[in-house]
Amino acid sequence: MEAVLVQNVSKSFWAKGQSRQILANVSFQVKKGEIVSILGESGCGKSTLLNIMSGFDKPDRGTVLVDGAVVKRPGRSCVMLFQHYGLLPWRSVLKNVELGLEELPIPPKERKERASEYLKLVGLKDKAELFPHQLSGGMQQRVAIARALALQPELILMDEPFAALDTFNRYHLQNELLRIQSREKTTIILVTHDIDEAVYLSDRVLIMSANPGQFHKEIGIRTSRPRDRGHDDFQHYRKLILDEFSLRSPAPAVEFSI
Image (cartoon, rainbow, N blue to C red; front, side, top):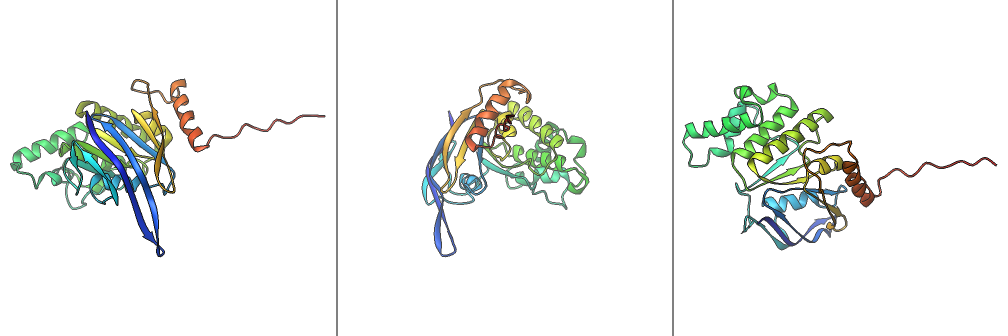
């Protein structure tokens, strides 16, 4: 069943007195429980597309449906995660996770229990009373993930959520995300510039070209998880994507002696 359906979405912005088309007739669909990555060069419209899907921006033309309902404004069925964690520094870790639940008709005790459950899921239940500045960057992102999951959304949109982390924290959080997603079955759409991350996490990778932004290639990752970054299969998919961007290093020149 489709969790997300994007139909003929176009978007333009005015810049320096003229209209610039960012997206042109973008269409795709995502099944429930899928992880789909969007790859493309800077400026091709990836983040604009996420903003439209989340309801923070409106398309000039086209529609976005999440769980069968047209997206007109931000809602709890779709949550956006950014690389900047957005935690409130004056609230404890637990209170940050509770934040999105406070407007729901949930008794305080149940709200606290649900927040604690998702902190446990991301491995931070023992940090509940700490404040964001007392956590590492990786831990802060896990708090942001717990806060998103506590809303029990149909869809999580991620805009380069691990880009600010070092390699080891990024790998750890990628594994955590897969572990959590396998339990929660949440649909995830991820914007990333990291080809290895896209191959490691995704069921499908959508490659976007620019001027205007359009999808020109879909690559299904047909290997089971967990994936080995050093395996030939992983390198095969990595090469397919590199070829789309013409990023592979040229073959070394061969010198001949005469």
